[in-house]
Length: 186
Image 1: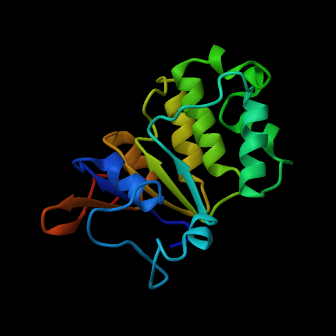
Image 2: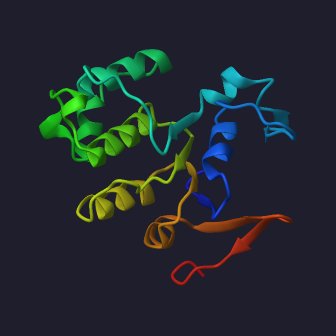
């Protein structure tokens, strides 16, 4: 799966599915398998390879982006060396030492992306990754994700994002996953 991006699109309750896949919510039925085993039996190992960008998340408003990423690096037991580089990459270097409470919604969304890629996880799980991004930020974010070396699983209604970032696209229907083709990805 390395280097490939996949999308499940137009899912009713897509955020719920993302929360289940990231072990933040127990399913009412069924299971999610990773390497042939239930993710709920190997949660620690499974979660160690994930980077998750939720659609929205409460953050510590009195932290700065640098402090927030430092805290997240401690929780994940990953290095802190690249924090400033990651903030530069997502366009937050100029506000790296401001309080999160002073950041716009789009800046907070970019900070969520920065924390997701922290530690270079094998798999990024993104819930509506372009939500709240300005028209100026969208091309930068699409480029970052298109160049990402790991696998990406996301829910998105942003057709331009899907066309520019994803190499495989699926729609979740009542009958299961159905592979779709998009102009530009055929």
